[in-house]
Length: 432
Ligand code: S3P
Image (cartoon, rainbow, N blue to C red; front, side, top):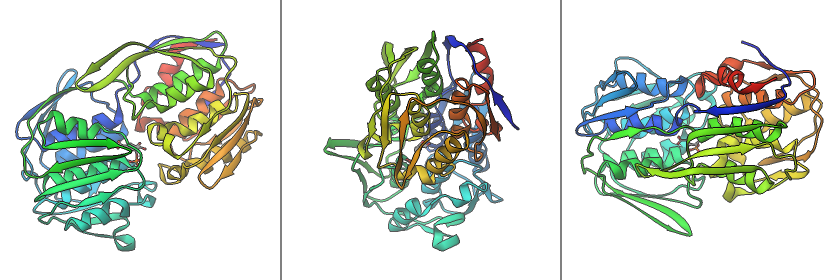
């Protein structure tokens, strides 16, 4: 599907964007492992999280959909059933990597594959530490690429240095650690999103964290998990698109409700503020260990370029393409470095951003691990390729709102992966 997004005057209103993708994935994966039942309110029903739901049903977990919640019957650590076919992970890196941790310690065989994008994404980063724990994983390029096969084994705890600060890698190891003998320890140079450890802690796991310079999580295997009730807040990554639009469009004002502002996730909002955006958290509150706020954003005509370095990347990793869009409208230079991880996301997001900006007649300089963008630039418009990547489609849709002639987004239906209602929500807040 192609979508054309044309210039608008401003955006105004109140919006509750869809629920958080990372917490929704974990709300199924971790509660399945419980010895007891769980309820999940406000589960995100989008491409990636429905993939997790389907995969866990195929592993024998009963997940019932009720009015506005899911009821999940935990099967405890080893009550999963051998799937009778290859598990289809669709486009979802999170489903694949976290589930690999779980399957490695089961007493059965499984096989996993995914779509064209997922089959190119690196799985060695989880397969390698899992093999150190005793996992038997094989696949293309020595177990580095999907399709992968897993012969479940008895696992043992390890200490692992997670150099890339990846939450998916950390979570896969912690899940395998739950099923292992002994203690498992994961250390990362910069703390990545911590929803797995928060949820496991709430479920009664024997888990603790140390945060002194580096960040370390330790978990002791074999302690059973209790079921819990989860209410998933709105996704800051989805809210970011609307926050950016409000900052860039004259006369705009938005209230984004119930947004997760966990410090491992709200880097984009913090950087927007540093650029000079009028953005504030209202009604900041804590719910089940997660920080939540209503985010109030207004048109901010004098935003300035900014520097993003490696230490800044984890808390805004999925928002960096959108930062590039904002940077085109900021005075001066925005320099992003230390973001080489963007090259192995749903698309090569550095290339996708730079190529598309250039195709629109705009200027941007590609770096191996980031980019340099100078503003303010005129946005004439044209055609962009989303590379079937939801965040590229949504980011360039926001740029379309500022364009003189409109921007046509190729493969715009990719928004279904994280935000199926994106274009309807956009319509709701547009003032033309
Ligand atoms: C995610 C972790 C991040 C992020 C992804 C979701 C998660 O990936 O980019 O969209 O839910 O754990 P990495 O772990 O590869 O950094």
